[in-house]
Length: 428
Image 1 (tube, rainbow, N blue to C red):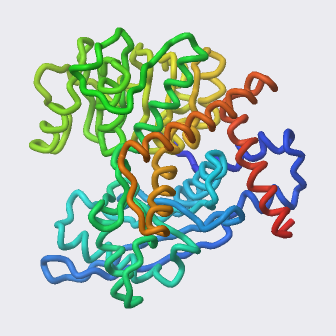
Image 2 (cartoon, one colour):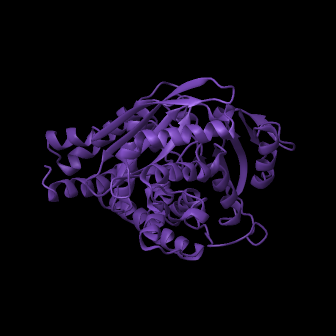
């Protein structure tokens, strides 16, 4: 995979939209830089008694529209530029979905796969201790991301309570339901992505009957084929909902160790059980072994990158054969690759439109925490559907009206809302 700086990719997208919005150089420069950035060193006692120091970050990119919002990821290859780029994407994502929030992102350079539960808990608490003075319900609200989960959020929320002396559920989202978490948060990103695919299908002449609740037995399987790159939380739910809600056939799945393929279809539940037992989707019986690169180049109707950034580049874009590229991951496609895909007629649903379901339901979790209320899953999903549909409709309307690509339309809408907020606050 070619080296790419996600922040530079985001900056290029801002430049692309500058002509449409007529941004002044000063405003454009402000939009290209994070407003606040924190670097922390986290000493953690490991199970063998040694002390290991981890490097962590928290970037608050822009809070013109409201408190910053964004996930925390634990990953061995994390970089500050990736965190900056992801924080920028969160800013545009919240604006595009018309949430009263800004954008942030956090991360720790570590390999959680080789850490015990006790080590992960101590690392999680150390990170919260280091950033607690810089976050809060009215300032910056973290959430789970790559290799973090509701349990990690629970430890961080508890550490915040220990430091401040009171329990504040709204300090973090993506929590367990028992600690103020929202119903429907576990599959919100994937569910929102499938709603976006449904809306795209309407305009492409392909109809997906996304049901609020369904089982694989109730939804007849169609000939629509899907490949999912990445089989973590988002990828698993993307594959599961493909069949349960849309009746699509998942033919390929992958994780960091490799990929599997079966043209007759794969059962995501069974594959996940295999992964829990073996640590990977590879070796799953009844499927052929392929590489992650080969998965991306399969001739399928829908390709869902659901892992990390920059997996589709100028090197492999010519070989992508999907009809719809639905970016469930953040930044999976480079700027150069997107030009190639568009020339080849592939319909791209850009990341901060497609994967907005997670932050939308996180926002609903915040609302429930503020009001000390708890909504049923049906209410959460109804609201999610409404907001995802509205965002897709706004973007596609601009595409048809002005003849611009999907991502440019999405950026234009999001940036216009952020700039308007900065103007109203007197910043520019």
